[in-house]
Each structure stands twice: as C-alpha cells, then as structure tokens.
Length: 132
Image (tube, rainbow, N blue to C red):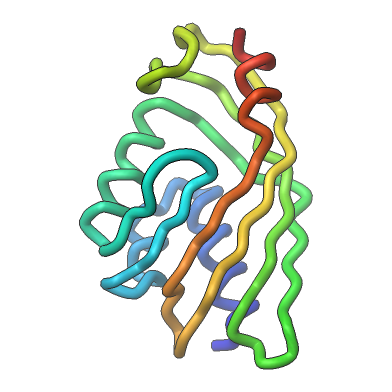
C-alpha cells in the first residue's frame, strides 16, 4: 500500500469512527504532534488521545485533499472539520453541543504501511470563537 493509500484509509477510518482501524495503521512508536500542547510518542498515548477526542467531539472530515512528495513517504492533508463540541476539554470553553466548521491540515510520515508521524494544524482562536 502506498503512503497516499495508507493515509486515505486512516482518514476513512476516522470518518467511520473506526478507532481500531486507525490504530492498526499507526506505528507502535507513533509521534503525534498536536496543534497545541506536548508531543505524544507511542500508541498508548495516541490511543488515550483518540478516546478523549471521541468523548469531547463528534467530527467528520470533508473536502479531503492528499498530496505526496516525490519519495512517497510524506503526505500533506487538507480538510474541513465538521464538528459538534460534546464535552468540555481542559482550558476550553464550556461544551453544549455547539456545531463548528473549521479548515485544518496535517502532515503525516509513513514508513512501510505504518504512519509514524501525524502533525496537525488548525486555527485555535477561530475554533474558540466558533464554539463560544
């Protein structure tokens, strides 16, 4: 499977709420670099992150565009996050089912058929404005 196919499957799993499918596509020492906060290394921390996200947010990604560089090991993703804020996350506004639509992007590194890095970017002040 190419890096593009791996990342496409990863985001398909995300949209289908198939967390086990997502986890099957990441390397045990996955490096997760979020927009805010500390880097997470390892599948245990990444799994905990997915559980927190599932509790706090209902999200679907649309308008996904994937681009690969010449070696085929890195993929850039651009998408729109269509979400519902279900449960308050630390240091964030109170949640009461607010809907939001937010452009975002990610950079992923793939070795073999496993994603070894996910770096995500979005406009946090805009998200706060949308849910406040």
